[in-house]
Amino acid sequence: MTQYIVRGGTPLNGTVTISGAKNAAVAIIPAALLIDGKCRVENIPDISDVHDLIDMLVAMGAQVQRVSGSTWEFDCSHVRQTKAPFDQARKLRASYYLIGALLGRFGQAEVAMPGGCDFGSRPIDQHIKGWEALGAHVEIIGGEIVARAEQRLTGSGVYLDMESVGATINTMIAAVLADGVTIIENAAKEPHVVDLANFLNSMGARVSGAGTDVIKVRGVSRLRGGFYSIIPDQIEAGTYLMAAAATGGSVTVENVIPKHLDCITAKLREMGCRITEFDDAVRVDAPARLRRTNVKTMPYPGFPTDMQPQIAVCMSLAQGTSIITEGVYDHRFRYVAELHRMGAQAQVDGKVCVVEGIDMLAGAPVKACDLRAGAAMVIAGLAAQGVTVVEDVHHIERGYENIIDKLRGLGASITRVEQPEPAAPVGAAG
Image (cartoon, rainbow, N blue to C red; front, side, top):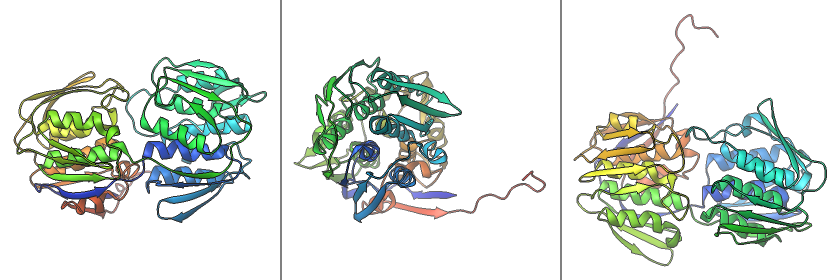
């Protein structure tokens, strides 16, 4: 059982380098199945979700090797397996991108229902809508999504009922090798959607309109190999900016695209932080006391739902009353109960959380409920007086590369420790 021991009360100061975008990497790696040849991808983050996806590709027959550092080479030309390893696929949400890739290449796929963070209902009906529009028949059998096309997928019009990032990506991946033209309307505009399109185009695809609400995919007969570098992680960068704000520090995040951070830095400015932008870096200088603000999470370019728990910590320490309205997921406030353990004053009513700012949080034992909530618990521990013990940190390590060393480089007192699993009660059934 791994824990983080955080000794708080010290402002973060210094410079941190941001890794490649998790949400781009977990789409690009499955998309490598479409490529007839070798491709090298640079700036892949060293996180557990990435390693799980790579392990699945290898189990299915791909040749994958780490060239150096964050650069990996993929050769999926010899893959013939269209069924993903069940136990691995069910662990993470991004495993469903294997369905779009396998459908696009082989016309069939069997992948376990995806796992990942629990934010309540996260249906895949829009993904299925996209695959079926291209000519696939989709069923859920024995906990697996089974998709088959009688012949090569055929381009079609797809109107998504909501701006779903996953459905946009999955439809795009499936359509790349389809006959004809696919038009995805009401498409998601997130930076990692654009990054996937750029990756596919660099390998010979013909995708246009990514970053707008209409994406057009003109099917091609094959994708060749090539080289690509993944964009920096918007959410990792935002997390370190929020950590600096919560602790009253001054931090520069390097290797970022400042435009991708506008929705985050705008709120930090409202809270009294001074933001300085450079070509590929952003610095935040926090005031002695943050000011209140209101946030509604929305699809890009709105404020990201993946930054909601982190800004909630800042609101807990701000002067005045702040309000968060969750506009994406049904149940993303489970972490609030953990913040209560540290003295935070926050009340949840459905999709709204009202946060009364207090002078100081107090260290306490807390759990990482999910990936971003876990990052928020670390931020809270860094800002609190005393010692905070964060459990279930495997959630955090799904999406943050080398978080302990990066925080230590900013002056944080944080340690990763292994605790023995509690012994089973005497007489418990085996």
